[in-house]
Length: 130
Length: 246
Image (cartoon, rainbow over all chains, first blue to last red; front, side):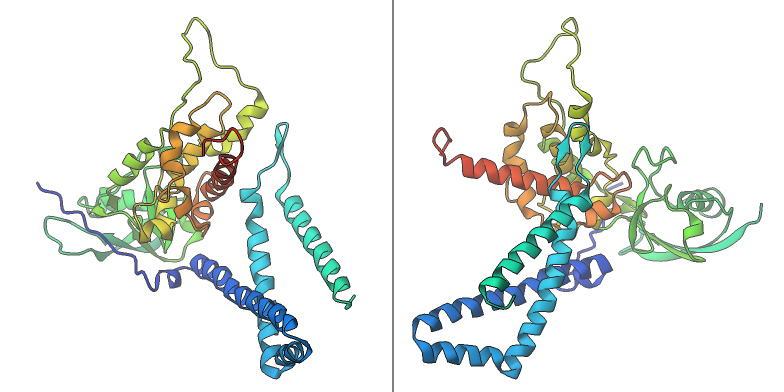
């Protein structure tokens, strides 16, 4: 008897809607778009700074506009989700063996949050906020 | 012992008469401690002997009875009916062609498994007279987790990357390559590199992590792949340093 295997194709456009774990994955992927846009805004800010006080002030005003504030709040929320979802899986990629034991995953994640806190504090001090 | 009646919706595909798969419903009287595989065996023995599915050990060792149960890749022998409602939907593993009913074609995986050379490649082969390859408990621990893979392929069923592009070597094969790369007795990393560090290998993985979430043996293929990415990236960078091969 001849074989006739049946192939079920995965939808290239809606596969991530088929399971909650795929939706979570897409969420942590999509959040990087906001971080990327925010990075571009900061780079533009550097250029505006180089163009003189008026250009710099215009850039600052843009950030302080209602639209700018809404975007920054969204970018902050998404960057928190991005950080949380990536730090959560770090122990899988970073497996540190000491003798016959492995460094506990929650310690590795904790150190990441600690370093993040220190760098954030440093940046806030540099910015004159803290 | 009290019995419970459940409704099993099983995806059927009989290539000699069906153009496409369809769900067939069975009413199964079950013991409370049964697993899904027991219910399938009841159907096979008492209701419909044409139903096809793979199984062997009934104790999550052989890896034969992988299937999708209520949308989740599971071993039929490890899915207890008490954890499900009165209606259970059983499908063959996703991302593989269906041969018949719950039996899928796994030829693609077998070829990929072979391609990563999943066996010890020692620096110098030893004769029996020379004795065994010695290893400390710490050296064993470095790879033991990845050696627990039973090739059940639930990871492939869960992996959207493999579903979207079947040229991807895939979670289990790459985890097994990592298992041998991490073995102190093995020197085969370079020999596996062409496949493992290729675009279709580790770099095709976008770390969805579904493979590790469904693995019934806690192998963590996603972790193995990310660790291999780090090693491969270090190899690439160091190849530009003095003494490197670039």
